[in-house]
Length: 120
Image 1: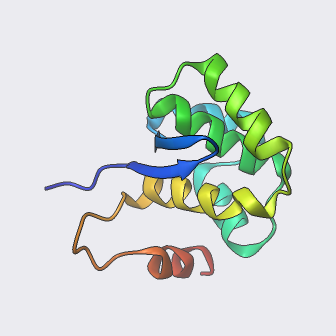
Image 2: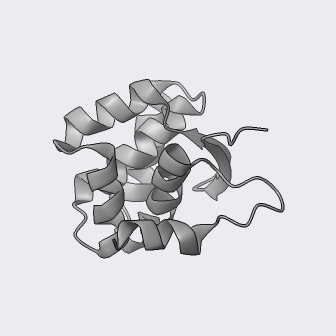
């Protein structure tokens, strides 16, 4: 079975599906003026910008099926009104799932491998 680029995580006031498909990755690229792999590297190596985190999460919620206005409200409340490091790991996981694929159950590729990809 192919890896799915979506993941389900607790966030804010519930549990939500996040997915950055091709269209969301293109919007992210435009919003932060960097390609998806560069953004993955930035959130992995500490050179991220605030807009990287908020846009990854917002577009991930939209790609996961949430209405854009609701995604914006959630990001304002649970990302932009909070310290950025609270949301960094979620942004990392969403980007890794988008570019590598979310690990399936019993799949050995996980966060450590995604982190290694960003440090190369």
